[in-house]
Picture 1 (spheres, rainbow, N blue to C red):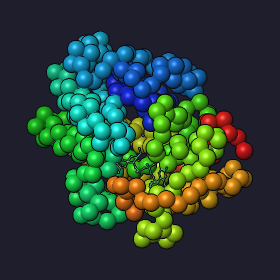
Picture 2 (cartoon, protein in one colour; picture 1 turned 45 degrees about the vertical axis):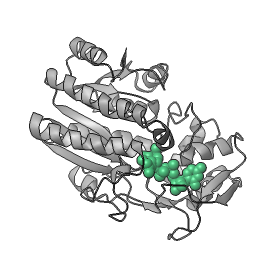
Picture 3 (cartoon, rainbow, N blue to C red; picture 1 turned 90 degrees about the vertical axis):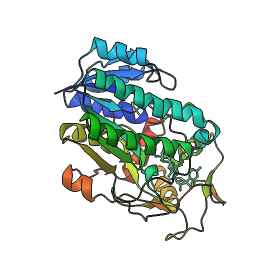
Amino acid sequence: MSKLLLTWWTWFIWSHTTVELLQAWHEVVIFDNLANSDQSVCDRIQQITGIAPVFVQGDIRSLEDLRGVFADHSFDGVIHFAGLKAVGVSCEDPFGYYENNIVGSMNLLRVMDEHEVRKLIFSSSATVYDAAASQAPFAEDAPTGNTTNPYGTTKFVIEQLLKDMSNWKQMDITSLRYFNPVGAHQSWLLGEDPTDIPTNLLPVMMEVVEGKREKLSVFGNDYDTTDGTCLRDYIHVVDLAKAHQIARESQWSGYEVYNVWTGSGTSVAQMITILEWVSDKPFPFENVDRRDGDIAISVANVWKIENKLWRKANLGVKEALEDAMRFRGKAW
Ligand code: UD1
């Protein structure tokens, strides 16, 4: 058991990870500026685990806030989630993304160093892979960079900073490169319900199911894939959350990167078919032009996580869609 600081921003992935860590008897302090989340999620976490996580309101852009929480608690390690993640918004507001994601991470690393906290898990993204220079399935040593939007640039830059911190400040750091997180907790108490207008596939599909949108626009059906629509590696959020716990408990010295992961691609057309199957209803959609910046196939090479962390993804896309629908109150 260890005492961990979790920097939060939105609560989808982070809340599920908190549950897994508490259930594995880690002590958790949540640090969140509440810009895009709601403290009541702590009550839901307590309902599931029976344990109330400690909550501290603070912002990673503020050295003062960070120094405050490190002065009040003695941490064995940090799991760093806090950061903005909307690709489209990052193109309109690159400065906001650099400030929150890069400056915030630098502040966190500085205060960790001041307090000699040397273990960190970072939530990175498959978006760091240079899709023009390598082909899916992406292995961890595939070329990175050449990012197509400021959000991706921030994840790429932070990974470089972390490598330096590991080399020159003797920190043990693990970057988890998430593919496409989907699904919800099986308790139906936690899931994805963005407060802003969603752009990711699953929340958009849920809005169609709920009747908030007339239909899904399928971005491109002329890609070089089996059915012409894009393939993604959709990872159930509960598996993703468990990956953080395992990564934390088996952290070696130095800098490590892992894809998280299923290793198989599901097309947008297949997602529609599976949703029709679990909901037993036709799902309205139309094929429209490709979306700028999309690549045909984004799938993880899973050799490293399966062999070094001894961890396979357990849950599939069908479970993810069922759980997401249950969470949104749409039992079928
Ligand atoms: C993006 C980010 C990724 C991030 C992920 C989840 C990039 C290049 N990708 O992935 O880093 O982890 O979001 O936050 O930075 N689609 C439709 N119609 C829609 C919405 C999506 O057809 O209304 C299709 C897209 O074309 C794509 C697939 O669904 O083929 C998944 O899209 P999305 O959920 O937005 O995730 P990515 O763009 O793959």
